Image (cartoon, rainbow, N blue to C red; front, top):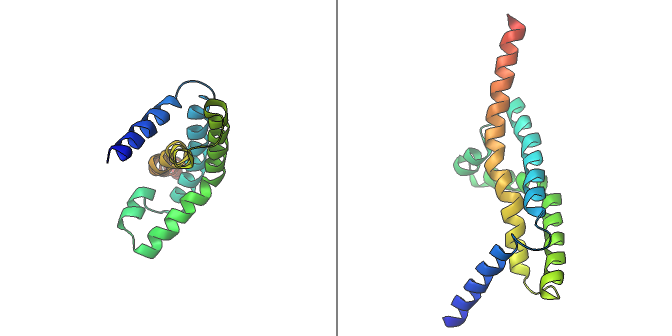
Length: 140
């Protein structure tokens, strides 16, 4: 059990340590790119009249949920791959080699997929509001 607690402590320390030192710009770059993907997909959701992404993930059938998940992963695949590449470079610079693949996966998901999940729904709501507001002005 002590080995597992040591592992968790090192894991947490390493993840927090990534916010300092080399390549900190990725903490801005990856979420920004995820936002752009969420912007694209959120506007598309608004045009198609879909429910917000997280609501759809939580309330739809298993097959629809899987399809929505795949759609989201596909939308941020490039950002995830960029994040993996940048973390591999970070690990070579800081640790002298690629030693912690699980940390690489976790940091890529935290910086790319989580912002996408959190932003796509609000973007769709704003786009829906914007479209409704502008369609009323055109009708008047």
